[in-house]
Length: 593
Image (tube, rainbow, N blue to C red; front, side, top):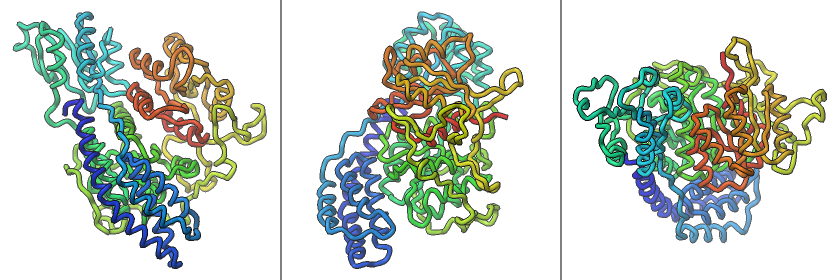
């Protein structure tokens, strides 16, 4: 697939989905009016049906850029909140406005094209630099490695390399690194013209003449792709078919294989049939909600380590905290820009691939190996079989009853704990020796049978000499009060914490090889001397292995996409829930055996 064509194909697919969503306006409004009339007449459950329908409309409208539809739907959804909401006389007028809003042109969605990373390691450094420049002009993210060691670090680092260019020979260390990858990228060898036909092709996808002009070489390298590249498989679960169509358009344009499911009761059979790499699911759905499905999957050894991401319009801090405590891998609030959705999912999928390649099986599922899965295309599954009806050949543990599942609900005071740039939590102990309970990233269950998400625990890990050491976190933020709050919180969790006040200090600390390596960087975007994006770019160019979790307010959608493109592994917007932040940190720094 042409790299620039990814964005174009995504735009075309989304345009089709938008047209379908707009054409569904009359049907959606008619359904809402029927529910509203029944609600007004006092029919039991009518308000809940109204709330469910308008909730789905709000999430999909925001995702597709229908801002006015999403705004009016949110206003209607508020009127239907609660157990027994009173019917409002404003509803008919708002529904009419909602119908008219469907005719408004949707906003333009920023579609950032995928920039595949190309590793260039040539003996001729001048040619390597020029070739990297030509590849950049063609939409690639090209890096010319200055040494074999740097090339190996880039190849086996957090962000996957999608093409490797070497010459005039393939270094032994790079050959070994390529063989260690579960899915090695295409390898291009630049050899002298006289040797092009005679060079052994073992493990090499293409041999090009090193004397070819760099511009022509770059075009040839961009065109090289394996005929059947491995594709990630995503199972998207949502009761709104328009939302599923939008997710499919975005993810298929990025080269993923997408299976869609609009009946949550069919989740287990679908998992057993397709063995997805990732599940993208809504939370508010009829029959079974996302929390119930998440609890059942995390209680099942076969799916305990499956990547599960919530994609929902429910944006309360309580819902986010509960989701992370139950074991969700990420929580995306609709609307999510198409490019960010793709980048978020790819970050999780690529990180899991690297874990498997390094021999860490804790991140995989207990399901069949990826290469043995049945090959399927994109489809919509709506068979009304309940989740309990699983094939008899597959043994499934009995799903825990709702009464047996720990609620993991934070206390009212915990739900109000937010960190902002000008405030600090009031529940923190005033001194390190205070008797106040430290804030934890997840509820600590007293019930021994309650579920603990994988990777949860203290901040310790083995050191190189066999002794355990705590994970080391660097907080880079120009707000002194926030640095102090984060330092105290993280130290209470068992982490070693350092702080710096700007981007230049962060790079000085991170790129100093004589100091103890940092395991995680908590990075603000708007800082003096160097911005967060500049820090990420410098770390990427230096092949630094440190992971970066960005914390910032006032960040535009296109900036979030830049952060992911520059190597950020996660992003949390300020103000943020303390519990959510700690849950993200513990997932990025899992315990090691």
